[in-house]
Image 1 (cartoon, one colour):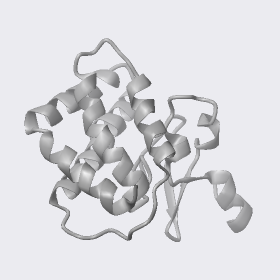
Image 2 (image 1 turned 60 degrees about the horizontal axis):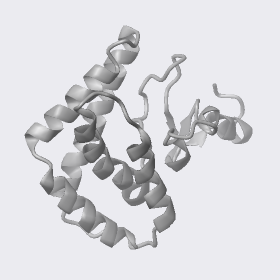
Image 3 (image 1 turned 90 degrees about the vertical axis):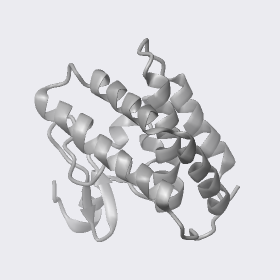
Amino acid sequence: MNTKELLASLEKDARRLSNNDIMKARSFMLNYVKFLPEKYKKAYSTELFSYYYETFMEIKGLRLDPVIEEIDVETYKELIKNYDQQVSEDPLEGYFQRFMNVVTPYLIFITKKPLHPAGMILPGGMTIMELNGEYYCPIKNKQKEVDIALCKYCICKDNEEVAKTDGDMW
């Protein structure tokens, strides 16, 4: 599979999602974060979902050809399997997974953008940073052992990598 084939598939999947499906995906996210402290609740329910929704709308309206690169099919399948393993008792989760099965591969394989927007507050009060076109995450390496974490697919580098090259910025 290459980026052009993946994008065609993602566009097709995006067209299958109705506005009602997206509202249900948003409802799932609101339910999922309801017990977080207020500042994280807002970040995850508003900022993060807005980032995903804007990305989704970009996919639906996209009419350009991506740079054609081969995609590791096993990595793609593993990514989708990660979502399938995340199970809750919330009936809205399926809508969220369908939505994210469109958005996440697009961010990872097509646009090569981080899974969380730059500047979004993360647990511990730290943020995703952009420096010279590179993205850095303060918790990337801390998530390596979490099987369902998607961090291993994210374009972000760990903050420690920028500290090694540009001095201790964080």
